[in-house]
Every structure is written in C-alpha cells, then in structure tokens.
Image (cartoon, rainbow, N blue to C red; front, side, top):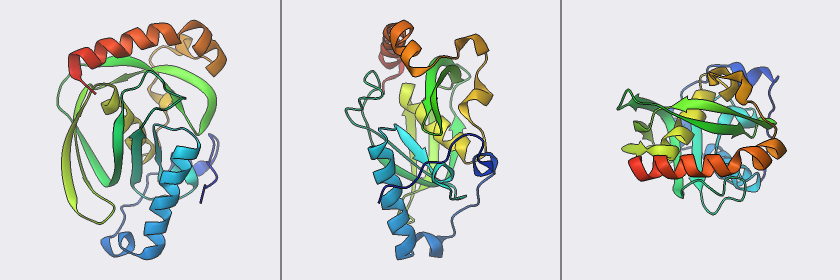
Length: 190
C-alpha cells in the first residue's frame, strides 16, 4: 500500500526516532509496514525514504535506485532496508551534491556529504549487517539517516544561494550535476 508522505512543517520530521525493538521488527504488521515503505518510495520515485516521512517515528529507512526518472544521473543502488542504522564516516573528505526530498516538494540545494561511509544496521529480518558505501550512494544513505534524527537537507545546505526549484534545477543545474556526479563516481564508485 502506498502511504501518505509527510511534508516539511509536520513535527514528526523533526523528531529523533526510536529504535525498533527486535520483537516489533519481526511482527507481521511491521513487516507489512516495511513493504509499504518500499512501495511508497518506488511510487514516488525516491532514491530512499525514512519512516518519519510516512508518519512513523522509527529508526528505519530504505534506499534503492533503479533506473529512477527523478534522478537519471544517480548510479544504481540495490534495495537495502536499514533498521536501527549507525553510520561511520571513513574519510574527512566531502563533496557537494544537489539534493531533493520527498518531504520537501519542489526544492533542491547543495549539501556536503562524506563519500565513504560504513553502515551498521539490521536488515528487515533482524540480521545484523555492515556495509561500506561510497560516492553518491553514500550521500543517499546519509540523507535518509538524517531523517531519523529530525534533520532535513536544508539544515545541511552550506550556501543558501544554491536553493532551486525542480524546474530551475533541470533547466540550469542538472547538466553540471551530471558531470559532478560522474566525477564522484569515477573517484569513489557507486
């Protein structure tokens, strides 16, 4: 089922989310919620989505990029469900990339992100995993993880002059972003 996406101004987007207890995670209702979260992300053409974006204050997000028309320049990223994630930066380097958000329709802005991280989390069945993620995809993980701490991408924008509507972004910035993304992917992969 496609869930309603919360928008900026909804207080749940500013909450620090609660960890998902293992017994709750394995509950059939919660597994159905995970399916709905995935379906909602896909329906909205998001690169990821976090639980508070659909009104649930849980520490869970989903990342997936597969021929995404909203982000045609993003590299493919396999479907990954991250429950109770912890992100560790593996370099002091940062790259700037235009981000958007399903909870902030029609706004984009440049955000500095770490190009090499480690994600430690539980999968949807409670199995722990650890994964290194690089490049643009690392930024997607950071964006979704920020949601779990009540942080929205405009909070991370260094230069407010970079704000743009989607139409202006496509007209004036997308070609340059495509080149910048290719450079990040060339250096870091993903």
